[in-house]
Length: 170
Image (cartoon, rainbow, N blue to C red; front, top):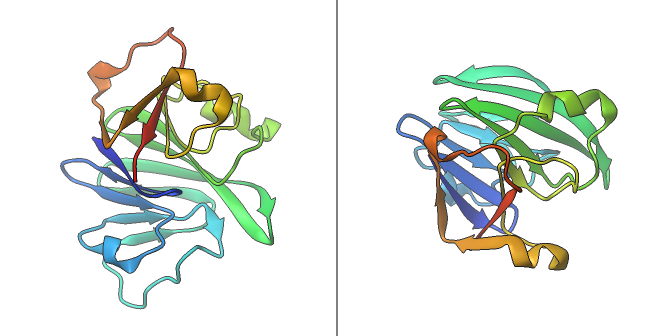
């Protein structure tokens, strides 16, 4: 799988069979997309009338091309409902946090215990193997690898080490 940053808060995940956009802000990124995940509702961009993809902006359970998705309400910010997502893709557990920056509510923490990748802003508590972001806090700058894109396979995941922060350039 390849993860890239499209903008400060927008990401793209690509596998051989699936292309996912997270919090897109530009329609030009929609070409050949299978799934669009919005962590804010209303979303940052209006849902197109013609769609050839799955559009998510609500909590619930979904599946597309072997990717299992669960969305959970995480609260509200500036009159926007915030949803965090848990994806199982290529046998890798991925947490999609989007704009959510607080500690997860107690009723959600167990769902996100075994993350291998977290994508979005850091909540300061979740400890995946990799944290992928496009913006790094000052206190985290010593433990960061800066990349254009992040290539990941299940065999690359090594447990028991400190979380590795990957900052993607956009």
